[in-house]
Image (cartoon, rainbow, N blue to C red; front, side):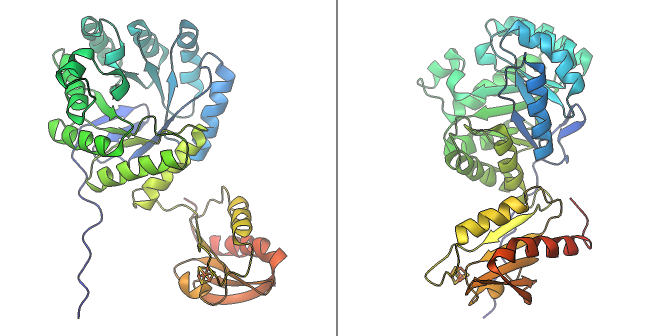
Length: 368
Ligand code: SF4
């Protein structure tokens, strides 16, 4: 019998407009970008720039900072100028901070129209100012802050239809003034709602879409909720930029975002630790060894796949796809490369030997 060919894993990317967030293109055929948001007080310029530097080092493409006060707005010019990646100002409630962010040289502005009082009156002015400056705006609709009129129309519930209606309504206000440099998000805490909302949005407009599951919680719950929703949508070809929202350090959001994209083949492969789950054949402290290998290879710039296997019975065979690996047994580690055993070392030498061999292999590969 012949094995049928599997379906294509990823649909054709949805055709969207392309916008420019500073140096990073979003939409069209631009690579899908990873975003995060600082957790520092924005007015604390040094702390905010330090966190942005950490996010950049972790692989963040675009960063967002909250602007809840005049002090934060006053900090924007310095932050925008010194940040190594584009800065988006996140504005709730206060349209005047939108103008401040544009004047400050921010790469984009995110507004939540449901939260900005008398927003409709201000659209013309915002569209004109942003248009003149060439600054895109994200219409960021959140389930928790939907326009009361739309919420009432949908029975008081933030349904996918309500989220999309709100987003497209706000877009139409900008379109009336000839401004279309827009990006949209419709966030909810429930992945099935997020999936339906973005699918509706994808057929309702051709603006680039920012994917997010809001209030997703701490890891691993938050990571899993985001990964589930993003995988379905990205597999549909929907999504141009992503943020994994976590109750935790924002660097973890960036790592998760990059891993989701790499797992779907949408980012170049990164260094990957492949480790077995362990079973009754286990002959080593697998959890400790895997943690040590993970720590030793943190930041290793070459996209190697390193396997950590708990026994010699199936180790190299199970991890044949790995570039490098170890199978444990009898206080020793069989080190293998591409499934072939190359040396055997005592347990305390396993991590160092893997690092030495990785560097040797890395000489023949390009860093990512
Ligand atoms: Fe079990 Fe060995 Fe497979 Fe790990 S590699 S799951 S210990 S059989």
